[in-house]
Image (tube, rainbow, N blue to C red; front, side, top):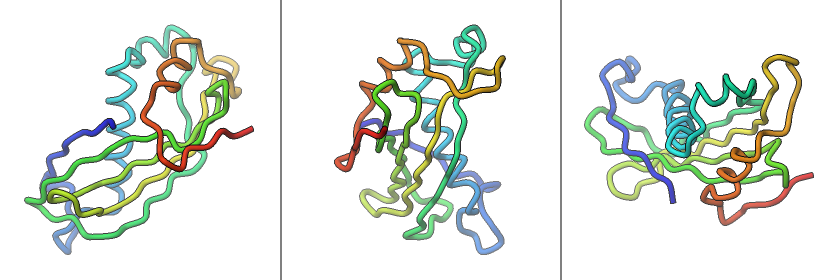
Length: 143
């Protein structure tokens, strides 16, 4: 399992003193980028190879409110993927205070050739990273 701890900032809160809805999505992006960077897929690598990730859909199901002072972690699991890793879905669970599920974020995405502005199959090194990404119990191959 891949997990990141997150520190809640004052700026992350809304007028009701709980986490703003858009911050959940920021935390999901943070976890995905951290995972990619830790596996050698940083912005420089993507720029050199003329590709990058794009999202088609992003959804968050809010379960419990998160407040300043809560201890939170976010995980990352591959939910769906094509065999060539050209399209994929990733799910994050945000857990607070030692085990309380606060939110579930699901994103569906693909890779784009940034020069041609068309969907593409990623380089072999990207496929290897995605093939070794932690998988959800509900993981399925897509066509």
